[in-house]
Image (cartoon, rainbow, N blue to C red; front, top):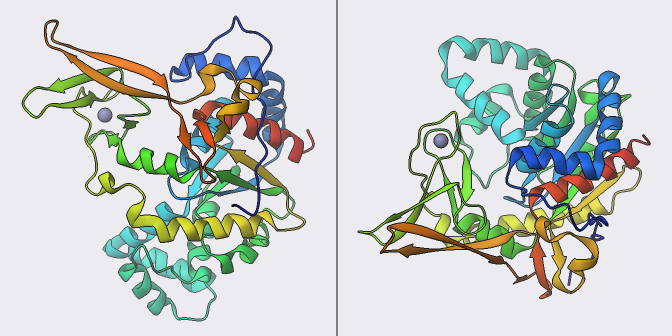
Amino acid sequence: MKDFQFPIFKTKIEDPTRKFNLTNPEEIREYFELKAGLEIKKLRDYLKNNTFIAYLLGKKNSGKGTYSKIFSGIVDKERVAHVSIGDVVRQAHQEILDKDKREELINWLSQNYRGYISIEKAIEALLSRNTETLLPTEFTLALVKREIDKMERKALFIDGFPRDLDQVSYSLFFRDLIDYRADPDFFILIDVPKRVIDERMKFRVVCPNCQTPRNLKLYPAKEVKYDEKNKQFFFICDNPACKKIKMVSKEGDEAGIEPIKARLEKDERLIKQAFSLHGIPKILLRNSVPAEVAKEYVDDYEITPEYSYKWREEAKRVEIIEKPWIFSDDEGVSSYSLLPPPVVLSLVKQMVEVLHL
Ligand SMILES: [Zn+2]
């Protein structure tokens, strides 16, 4: 049993005639216009002269990047930035290896970094880090500050910090560090059942050229093909800006969450810790809805279906079969998983409240 429960957010509206295909970008826009047009306008007006700092906290593969990308896409791409700590650290690693950029980075650090270990030792830790060890927090924060200082002033989604329990208290003072002292900050906590993360990993495929992600079970590409020799279905990248190439799965993904169980448990403790903080607003996003009450809270088209495929030998074509996906959540409750847009809808509405708009 979890020690805390996220409320179910109602996204259903009383208009049974209007349905949306929430994998189509144009219909996603119309969906938000209908269900949150007023709130989106308020946020846009707010962002003209103001910013915010939002800490995204969710388990690995809980959709943090997806949600913030949809949010900025519908609210204001120019005024909202997604800062991934993982990306910032990887970029610093590249700069250290690059003769021309190395010096600039070290100069900057010598003027801005303060911490318990020397810059040299910190750089050693950077170059030898792996997924289990964390860099010293002071060093990571210095790198993040540098990244934010380089940007035009924008509202920020911080993804990947705090990452450990002892980093939570740093986040309470983070806005002072980056000179955003007067801007509101809040946590966005994301609750996703383990089963959903497991399926997202097991069936994930990506375009080797443009990195567009899809999922064989939960999110098909427009074009599905069949490899008769290996008896396998596969997707063709449908990014209009890309070539029509075969999407592939990543080695190790077939094991699902098994290899990252310890990490997921750590992430859960972190969410619990943030949940109990006082004085900083929290937006609670939940990915799943108990099947028993789904009709009351969400519209059918907001639920993630599951897909399977059949090869029609006679017609030489793939048939796509769509049906509702029901699974047991972490407490054993039969549940549906929401598509990203309704989760972002609840983010938009809760943010308007948090910012008192
Ligand atoms: Zn592609």
